Image 1: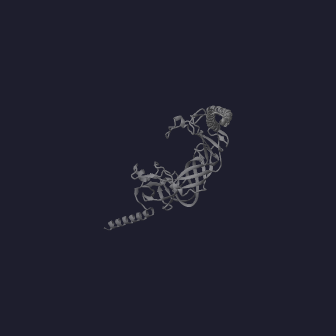
Image 2 (image 1 turned 180 degrees about the horizontal axis):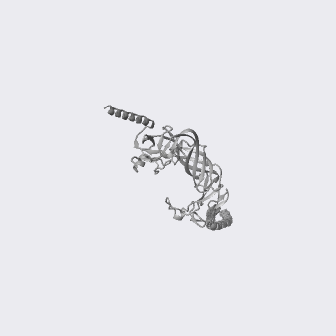
Image 3 (image 1 turned 90 degrees about the vertical axis):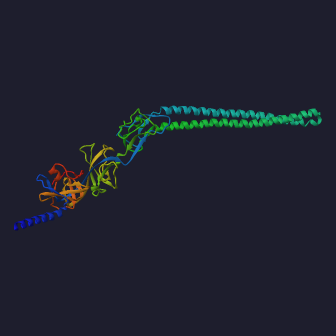
Length: 437
């Protein structure tokens, strides 16, 4: 009987001890022990936070070079600056064949000369007509005056002769009135003919000015200093384009539609990098922090920069499988290097705050379960799952809150290690890197 009581007491004390140690770890699941499970100890460390991410170079300033909006068909490229060439403001970077416009200019110049000749002729014809009309008018007025003198003699003439004189005066007046009407009609006709010729001159002049402007626009100069970037030739597909299609660059000899975007001049002196960081890193990235930059296209080279801005709103695409929110970060490159190009990808190391006595453990010891960060605390011959708060991730180590220094944790999922397959929906945090104990 006494032996049974001692056994129950020992079991009670053992359960009490296990319960007390479980409070420190806030256990949720007990997992059987495994002597082969690697472990690490939670430590206090002094370190500088580093946030690792990647981004792409782009420029704050650029200018698109397009084909001039000239009606009348396609344009042919006869000069195009090379892709990647350094150009200066005012340099001719794109030129089109002006043959058609030169032909139009010659035709319009001929039309202008013809219109000018027609104006001269219209004025000359009007002058001749005016002189003839004035002569005829003098004769008509003289005929009226003469008829009036004959009528004045009617007192001494026979009635028949007097009536003849009166009829003659009426006829002379009618002829004068008709002539005056004809003269006004001649004037209006001459003015109309001159106006038509002047309108032809105006149209020919406008067409000639347009042709001259088009010829001038065939040569396109760079509006800024920068690097030349050649666009894909959408005209090669008839304007049809789908995402994923690879278009050939524009080249000398290509036929392009008026208004097509041919190239772009980018200001390489104002390059910056666009990147994104996750929610965990967002609080550790601040404007003004230094950044080490390694450009994929320039292996072995390291550039420096500074965080210019950190987005306050999340930037997440609706098709993104990563459920975590991301934040935009803009990084300014410290020095200009002509080898750098927009579109280059870069690996970034953002130097964050210095932390003293930070609670740390290898990042591989942190797992995710039901959307929460957890660790497996060693307890007796088993491991207990505990929720923790990850303050930061840096160089393979996780900075935590909610776990005491000295706690021993598993570096692998104990249940998965023991059984060979997971029994819970636990997965290692993808963004965590490997680290040491």
